[in-house]
Length: 400
Image (cartoon, rainbow, N blue to C red; front, side):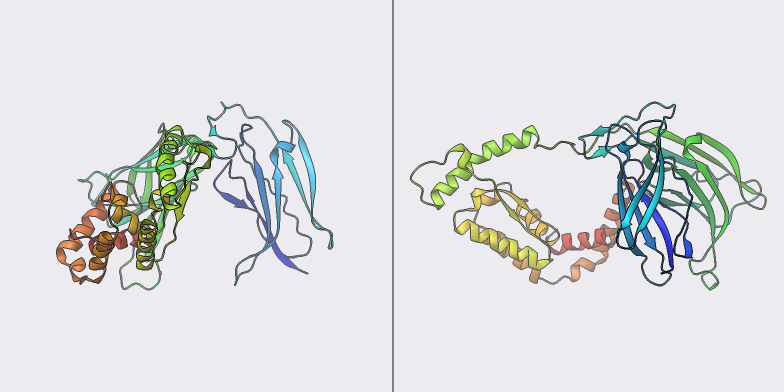
C-alpha cells in the first residue's frame, strides 16, 4: 500500500538529538538519498537506531520498523553498503550506506564504565549589549535556543539601556556540532487576535557553535542594532554521580556496620538460639510508592506495624516516592526516630492533616512562597507548579 514514509536516526553516544529524513509522500518504494554525519568516539559502543515511520497528519505517526546497527562493524576508512530485511513476508528492505572516516581533531575526554558515558560539557555565554543607536527601545524579547542543551531555550527581555542585561548560559555537549539560534520577538497588544502567541518574529540569526567566539552588531529592526557577544567556556565541574557497577566503599562500610543491628533484631524477633553468621544476615529494604496522603499514612502504619513486631531495626533501606517521601521527611526530623514509639509522629501527622488549611493561603504565606520560588529560580532550577505544591505541603504539614 502507499505510505508517507520517513526515517528517524538516533545515536545517543554522539548526539542527544534525533534527526530525520524528509517524508516521501504516497510512495510504495521510497528513496531518500540523504546524508547524516555523527561524530563518534571509539572508546564507547555506538549503536545507531533507525526507525521507519508512516507519517500521519491527524494522529500519531505509525512506527513501522526499528533497526539497530553497531557502528563498530564498519572499519576506519571503509564504506559499507548494507541491506536490512525489515519484513521477510513482504520482502521489505532498507538499504543504507555507512562510511567511517577520521577527523583531524584531538580525541574527546570521556568518562565511562562501558555502558554509561559522560561527555565533555561546555558553557555557552550569551551577552546582549542593549545600547541602541537612536532611541529607547520598545518592549522586545529575544528568544535564544541551543538544541541538545540542558536549558533548551531562554527568553531575554530588552529594557532600558541604563540597566545592563545579565548574560544567559547554555550547557551543551562540547562536540555536538550544534548552533545558537536567536530570534527577536515583539509582543503584540493584548487585544490583537491575529497571532495566538501574541508575538511577531522580526529578526533571526543562527550561529554555529564551532565558530565561536562571536562578537558583532546585529540589526534587529529598522535603524536598531545591538551588540551580540557569544563565547564558549569549558565546563570543568566534576561528575555528580559515580559511574561504576559496585557500591562505593562508604556504602559497603555502612552495610557491614548495619549487619550487627539487623542480626540482633532478627534474633530477638525470631527467638533464635544462636547468633546469625555474617553471611546469613539479609539486607532488607522497604519499598513504597506514591499516592499523596494515602501513601503518607500507609507508610506510617506499616512502619508502626514493623516496630510492634520488633522488625524495624532489621531494615537497612527505606525508599519512597511522592507522598511516601512526606513520611520520611517528617520522621527524619529526629535522628533517632526509629528508637521512639511511632504512635507519637502518627498523632502529629494526624493533627496536621485535620487542621484548618486557610493559613496556607495567607498573605504572609504567599510572600514566603514567592520568595522561595524566586530563590530557587536564581539557583538555576526551572520552576513549575510542582514547586509551588511542595511549598503548600510544607506549610500544611508544619507549624512554622
